[in-house]
Image (tube, rainbow, N blue to C red):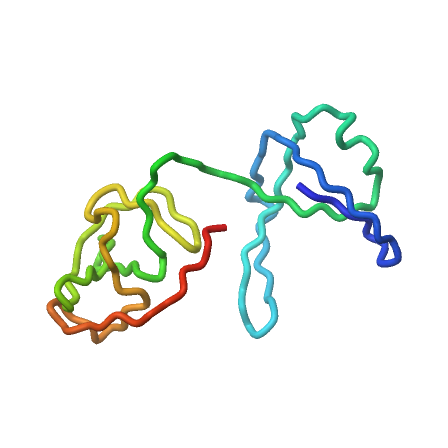
Length: 154
């Protein structure tokens, strides 16, 4: 968690790490129209800090707080990019690349975020999947890989 004064003239930046118990209140859910027509869902969150008060007591009033909340964490989680997922009815699927051909594979998901989803069944580590498959891609269609640079996980 980091905090900084809300006054533009203030250049002091205070960084500290805190733990807390989060309470999510859906009553405050608001749809925000951002730049270029992108909609965001924002939810008001109240977090009770569990860190010792001497670490954060000096912040005072009128500070902007930038927070990162970890809602779920797991060890050795197999995950797939959300951009590779598509639905057929009420089931999730991906196209796996095998011998230069796309093969539809049904998968079961666990936790999901906007960028990735936990795979419970249907994929193995190291299998290549098609990202952003379009509606015209069918089973057994020829596909070619293109070089992409991996981005580090956030």
